[in-house]
Length: 215
Image 1 (cartoon, rainbow, N blue to C red):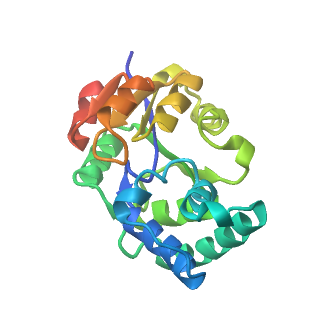
Image 2 (cartoon, rainbow, N blue to C red):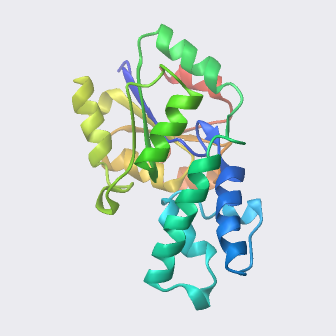
């Protein structure tokens, strides 16, 4: 089958946003005199949305729902200001997107990052590449819920089986399977190749150009 559309995860797949996310959360923690974390630690906090990241970053003794919500709002405020400061596309991504556009492949972004920030990053770093960029607006629709991915396929008038779902985490591979899309992992993100394969990746890419071989 010729694949006609690709849905990409954002963080760890298209862009390396680790430092901006970490810096924003560490600012919140510092303001509260809580311990901060290294970039390596934050790498394992990313993937299930920023609210989940806040919960993981807070001390276990200060992790009430009220505290999480307050810190989440503060983190969003901090992150909104710096979300494209250090965030950059991974090597080969822009060239890949140019190639895909030239082949008339439909492209979208689906992230567990807040919808406002997903759209901001996608449009500022990758102007004119994506038909749509969808982030998290309702917790119930967070990946691996396939609802938004299926909605994208409907907007393209494509069956899910005609779409590749590309991501760097187990959450992305599960989303692909739940949507009946072809799961493609990337090894340059925040999870290991073994994790991706275990969670259902049919292919794991080691560089961006390999994606065109699947097409």
